[in-house]
Image 1 (tube, one colour):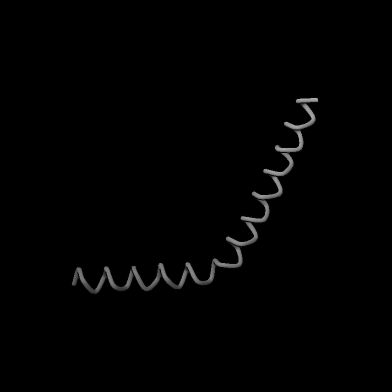
Image 2: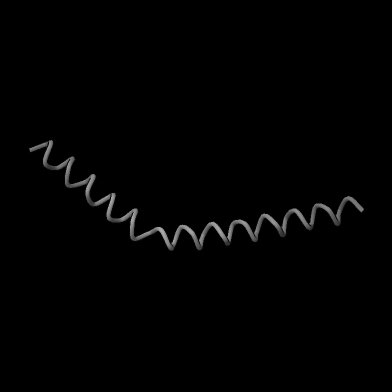
Amino acid sequence: MLKKSAALLAALAMVAGLTACNTVQGAGKDVEKAGEGIQNAAEKAKQ
């Protein structure tokens, strides 16, 4: 019973991971843009 539950959880996690690929990619782009903004602000502060 425990092995069946573990296999079911693993399968659900894989499906959730596959469907979230686009979401994670979009979040990565947002984080990248935020990092660029911080970097630009830091460069301006140096001057």
